[in-house]
Image (tube, rainbow, N blue to C red):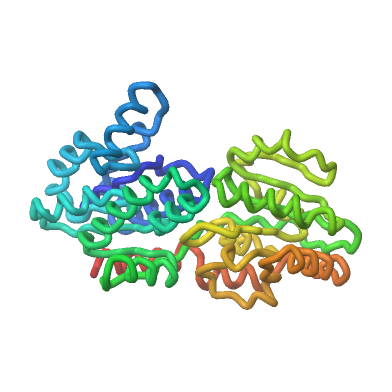
Length: 359
């Protein structure tokens, strides 16, 4: 089986949730089909900033292309695709690829992986910035084409599946949850202290992450006695914006095992977005107690009383954190770790990839 893998991310990068998803997808297909049988079309080069590339992207938007796609890339894909049994499209914003492959009577299988419902994210952005309505229309058009012209649709959770079917009509969907390769290292299992626990926030400088942690600092931090650590690609930009001595901003850390193990619990005050939050999977893998919003836990099958707490208001967060302070629990949460192994490990989703290739 030969597979053409199309993505706007380098398959070897793992600094953000999206990169981890892309890397997982590529590695899974490589194990099933053999690395020698997979070729990559990497569109990330088209995202590099220069005056010429910015102008090209601007005109491609008006032509209905987004996320690095253009007429040149489309022609290359249409010419190359017949040599492959499967075209795997790592993202849902390339409707032109699926649509034109079908019109060209491509005989193989087109598989789409929806990292998120991108049109839903664009709609959320539009509600904050009205000028971005054009981007919502662009994403909606492309996602509709991707959804209608693909053979296998991989979606991370039931919410996204329902939203897609509501917007674009009924098509079969295969649920492929977020998963991570197991790199857990058990370093420290001490109990929480009741005086000043370490509270860790993990996430790149993606808008819902930035908005979420700013909300937490503004509304919750003054009412709890904790040490707040912030880790994530691009988050170093927040260093000059927080003056509270209780806050440490680290930015990107290549190996977070040690800082994760030393954290008493993870907080995830995320109020917007789509898909599943990879940071939640990472916390489960490391066996952490998690205090997060409903959005942070979306798509995860968990007993929240065992994993930590669900909080959707400042009062909820303050109460939950103070409860942890007053009633220490083990820093290593066996339940979190077991749920990762049962439902969100690399081996679990590898079986779903095998099913997708057979369907």
